[in-house]
Image (cartoon, rainbow, N blue to C red; front, side, top):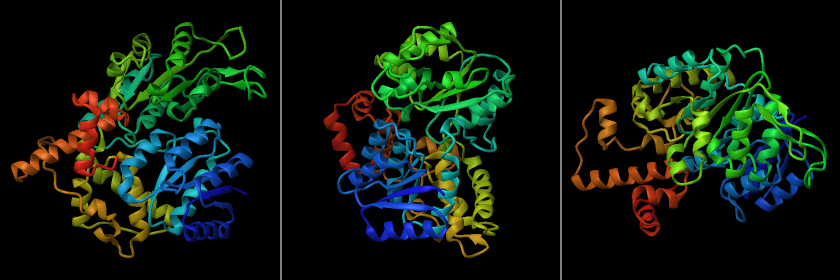
Amino acid sequence: MAGILIIDDDTFICKTIQKQLVNKGFQADVAFSGNAGIKLLKERRYDLVLCDFRLPDKDGLEILHEVKRMNIQSPVVIITAYADVRMAVKLMKHGARDYMTKPLQQEEIVSLAQKLSTQSRKTKDFESPGDFLMGETPAFKQSVKYASKVAPTNMSVLIEGETGTGKEYVARFIHDKSNRNNKPFVAVDCGAIPKELAGSELFGHVKGSFTGALENKTGVFQQANGGTLFLDEIGNLSYEVQIQLLRSLQERTITRIGENKPQKVDVRVITATNENLVREVADGHFREDLLHRINEFKIVLPPLRQRPEDILFFANHFRKMANQELNADVKGFSDEVNEILIRYEWPGNIRELKNVIKRAVLLCSEAVLSAETLPEEIVQFPEKTVARDSEHRGTKAFVSLKNAASGAEKELIIRAIEEAGYNKSKAARNLQIDRKTLYNKIKQYGIDI
């Protein structure tokens, strides 16, 4: 029976979720503060953690850091208000498995608990991302064509794209089309590994090699031997681990921590990032020689906002999936919903779209999904006013010059922060302004990021 921990300072929500899960056969504990939740995590292992983002003593990001520091493998799902979706995307970069938006629905909670608790006894490294969907956008089709071309080779591939654009799907697609497809595909989120344990996670260790090394550990390089190793968000690795990784790629050997004898490995490495690694090299955060080693072939995945022709394609696919999971029978979307879905920017990309559609299907009581089932923030999202969006849509937008200028500036700031991995100092440098000016602009435009 799966153990689930709910961390939320709202006692009513905690008890309600607990009751729903217990009625479905789960064991569920509750904690009304971040510290109480961490205490329970130290005492026992959970198959899933549901954690509210805003707690009285800690926020969701601090909880994730604690979980990483203690090397707890339980998947963490953040509960958040829909207005915090950009923050939810940031949290996923720091190791959250997924996010749920309030108000919570019973079927949604139970479905997620069943899915993630079933996977929990397997490591995240071996999860399948599901069926691969290409869509209709020429740019994405070209990316898939490149993936097909490079798949039969042993070239190292670097996949660039924002969080939620499908980088792991493409990596698995390459593996499935390669000559290694009968060997393991091991996926590792480098952003979710505590920095002090990254070397052990990648290369393994021997018992007693450091405090806490209570038994021998096989690293992911050895787990993937003969197959493909996918290193997601590789830019999060420390400079020291980058040196070890470069040596392993060059010599095709690994040396476990606490051991002097190198071991041969035959692994094809595919990496992914949502950062500009060339800029990271220039800033001294990423090794140039490692970048050349992993970037034998680069594939760039466009964000969903640049794939308007794919939004309804994916939305309908997710509607069918949600119908099956929730035992529903929603036939389609109203014209108004279609317009809203295309207009919205989808900062969480395909993953966010999937969550929104599933939630809407759950709330829908008619044959056709209406705007009332969508989050208010999506329904009220403004029409595009920036030139690049008008070009993508083939439309024109006429607004006051003042509003157009401020709208463009706000969007530029948001994009700069996202591209800097939410490092505001770095974003300020990229925008060629000082940090104080950036913080003033964030406050001026009410940017919640």
